[in-house]
Length: 119
Image (cartoon, rainbow, N blue to C red; front, side, top):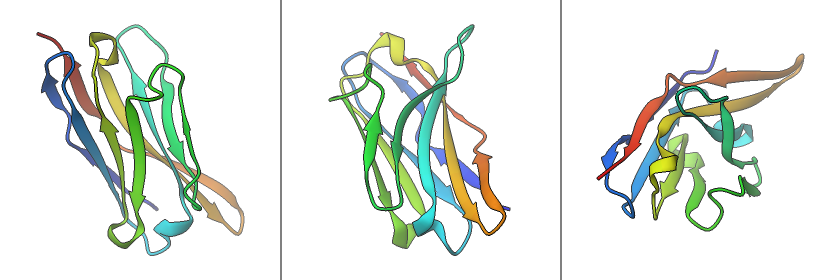
């Protein structure tokens, strides 16, 4: 079982920045593929950014150039640096992990952290 705990959400003005953190349990974090998703009211959950075990990153078109995903394997933590925030970035942000096991890949979710962009 893997536990994911997000932090860093809050209220920020348009144009501002926030950094989300996701701390993961487990001794093999370095091999997890990690991602950040978000879900706004009335909308489907969408993937915002992802990072593989070897550090390859991928971003949704809507956040490319503004958001940066990174990981610190020594701290079992993945980050999402969000700059130039817009009101449409308002959502609950979720951390996601794909954990390879001998039996296949297990998927885990954090509890979510609210990000509100408003003046």
